[in-house]
Amino acid sequence: MKYFLSVIIVAVLSGISISSFAANAGWSGEATIQSFYALNDDAVLIKLSSFNNPGGCSTNSSGDIIVNPNTEKTWFTLLLSAYMAGKTVNIYVVNACTPYWAGTDYAEIGHVRVINK
Image (cartoon, rainbow, N blue to C red):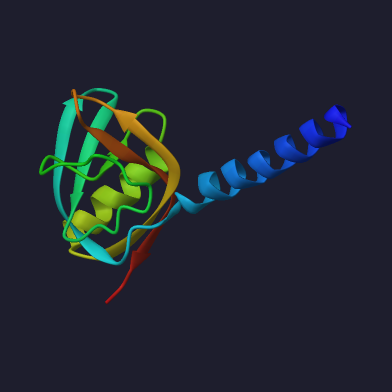
């Protein structure tokens, strides 16, 4: 009986944690890119005109999204091109936040859409 009860509890808790984990990903919302802030060769913060912050990251005025231009070349190129052309973007952020400074962390990219408006 204890084994059966343990299995039920684990199954319920696993379901809760998986559903809450999945709920933290989502689209940033359509916005324009306001700024790029190069922190170093491997980290650039991108500030959007509006950001839904589906992952609940502790972003600040320095940026909302973090991208590594060396390993995420396609996303960085798309976002820089959209910025230069004044296009609207919608960024799907995954359920992870990258910490940088104390008390801050920034959304990680899962997908990028550039919209011609």
